Length: 330
Image 1 (cartoon, one colour):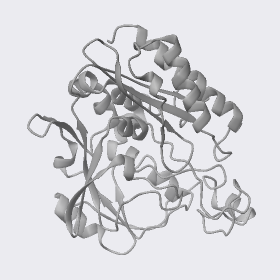
Image 2 (cartoon, one colour; image 1 turned 180 degrees about the vertical axis):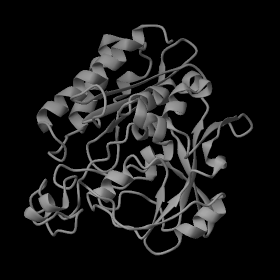
Image 3 (tube, one colour; image 1 turned 45 degrees about the horizontal axis):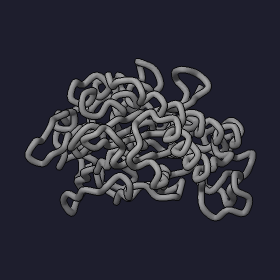
C-alpha cells in the first residue's frame, strides 16, 4: 500500500490568504488533488504544507467580460463544469471537448482547470515507485544525474500530458497569477518551458487565479483530438488542438495548430501559407496541415508506445480533424 507522507494542511478562504500561506518553505497548492496526491504517494514530492483552495469561492467562477473582450474561467473550476458550461461550449467548443476528454467522470468532477494547466510533467522513467526509481539510479527529474530518454542529455524531456493546455494555447489564452508582488498576466504560449523539471514560468508563492480567453471576433472552426490506449483513465500519448478563423466568405483567414505530449511545453506548428483562403474541410488543406504537423513534431520515448507510431498518429488525427470541418458546427 502506498501511504501519504506527513504534512500540514491549511485551508484559507481568500486568495490573499492563500498566497501568504503558500510563501512558507515546502508549501504546495492543493486543488482537486487528482495528480498531486498520487505523486505524494510515490514520493515524487514531499511538501511540508498543503494549501487547500477548496474554500475560495472566487476561484470557481466562469464569466464573460464583454468590456475586456474575454472569457474568464477560475482556476478552481472543475473540469466537468468547464465541459458543460454554456458559455464555454458555445464560444470555445474545443476547450469543452478537451475538458470532457480528461480521464473519467469521477476525476473530472474533482480535477480543476488550474490543476490541469499546472499538471506535472511525466515520463516512463519517473512516474514509478521510489523503489523502482532507485533501481535505475533515478533521473534528472527524480534526483538522478542522467536522462534515460536522451542519452547524455542535460535537460529533462518529461512530457506535459495536459488536455486543456494545447487548446488554450491555440486560443491565445493567458493566465493570471497573484503573488507577494501583486498580479501579473502571462500568455500561455510563453508560460511553459522546455525543461521537464521546471516547466512553468511561475515564481514561488504565486497562485493562478483564472484563465482568460479572448472572445472570437468572427466565425471559426476548432477541434481537439488525442489518442490514448483506453477511452478513459489514461493520459493522452499524443494530442492536437486546431483553430481556424474564417473570413466573410467562410475561407481560412488564420490558422493555428498546437501539438501536445511531445515534451515539457506544447508545440505550435508553423503552418504553410497555402492554408490561407482555403475552405474548412478541404482535403488539400487537411493534407497540408497534417504534413506540417508530422514534419515538425517528433515524439521521444518519454511516454509509453513507440515514438514513430505516435508521430504517425499525429498526422492521421490532424488530417481527420480538418476533414471533419466539412460538417456544419454543432
